[in-house]
Image (tube, rainbow, N blue to C red):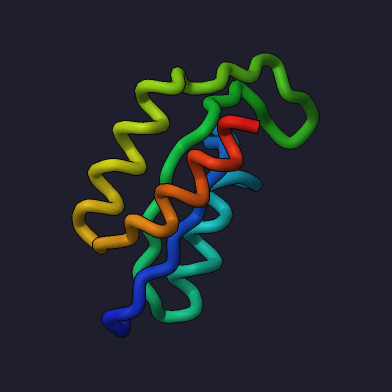
Length: 86
């Protein structure tokens, strides 16, 4: 594994076939470290999506704040919030 970090921002898939879980698997297969920010939680499997719950704005902001503090990615955080405000 290299020192490279790849971020994925999206929903969590409880079946692990899509969403953040699938992203992290793909990122790790490339030999880099994967980090995530969760935007929604789903109850799903390969044949149905039973429920989707978005995380609160406060939780999303907290995840971005601590993630960006570690990597000094203030421009990324600002870009994300600009999209949220639309």
